Structures are given as C-alpha cells and as structure tokens.
Length: 116
Image (cartoon, rainbow, N blue to C red; front, side, top):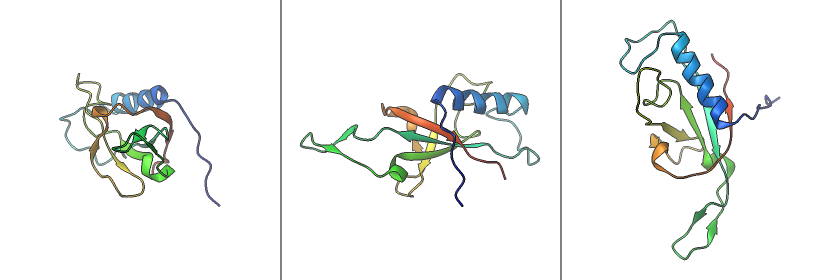
C-alpha cells in the first residue's frame, strides 16, 4: 500500500527545512553531522507552463515535474546564508542537480518525505 502524501505550500516546506537546519545547528559550511539525518521534500511544479519552439504548450508527466530536494542542498534552507541557490533532481531521473531557483516555474504543491 502506497503512503498518501500530504500536500503543503512551498512556504511551509521551506520553513520546515530552514527550521530543521536551525534546530540542528546546520550551516552551509558546517562540519558533517552524521548523527543528524537529512530531511527530504519534493517540489511539484504546475503542468502546462512550458512551451515548445512553436509556442504550443507541452504537458509533462507528474514525475518529470517533481523535484526532490533536501536540507543541505545549496544555500536556500541555510540560516547562516543570504544566498538562494536551490538544487533538485526530477523523480523520473531525467534531470539531476538542476538549479531550480534560476527558473520561473510555478509551484503547484510540495510534500515532505519520511526520514529514514
């Protein structure tokens, strides 16, 4: 049985990541803290916002427009940094290590993944 996801707003996901890093003393150049597990989330972008070279809308499957991010990727979730770099990888494996903050894609929703 597949676990049901709980959709949350992007602002809530960002708050969760930022707060997790702050509570655990994790900064951009912090030493590795193997005792603190990473926190993962998925950002799902809205469909029908991409166009081909002729201006026709292209529809992408859900997993192609869903990107997994985690609390240590870039400066986006780091309390000690003013930067905004946010990196993620598509769930279908077609895009990896994409700098998501450089695109003007509309977020549909986010969800947190369980920690292992």
